[in-house]
Length: 278
Image (cartoon, rainbow, N blue to C red):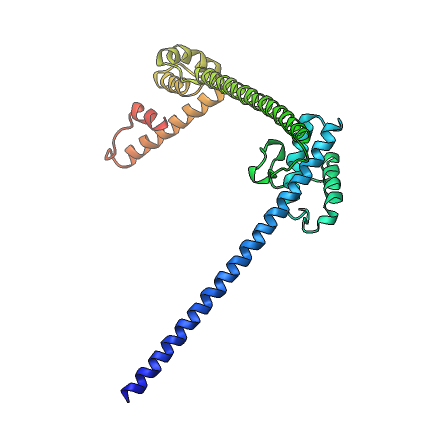
């Protein structure tokens, strides 16, 4: 029965080959239709762009638009017509002229625009430029002259905007540098004012501080007052009174502990107790 099995295998292989060929033909036909559809859309889109350019040319030639204004209107109209949810449906040639006129009018009046890009800063996308055809040489020269005037005005305006942005950036940078310098000067001034006194300065000021606090200028009192003046920019009489009272309380506690333990704890050293306070 081997011959029957081989026959079935051959039939199956032929069937698979036929199916593959059919799938390839179908895919090729779909690709051809898609390419044809894209070519048709591209032709329609270029026709729309040419119609918009002609309408802007007409209004610019009539003096309704300056070259710079015409350049801005053309850019915005091209983007608005070909992108986004409000783009024109250019499949119906019979309504295109009226739709284009209304589009350009809306752009000029500001009632239509695009929120996808900053049209005022965008160059014209080369893909949006139409393949122009002209009725005669005079018409061609006129259209090219209008286009050159638009682009010259646009380039000049763009250069001025760039210079203004550069000036603003430089001004912002200078202002930031000035503020930073002022801030650093203020910090340095504050640090100089708030820096701890040197010991010689603190020792010189300590007797006066104790006198204002009504305290005797004893050795321990002078040391505590000196330490306070070295640590803090401003020391009030109340603050030195609190510090000396704390020192005396700690000293008495250590003396009491020494006596209660029969001398088993060390006798309190004033120097070590002042170190603990600071």
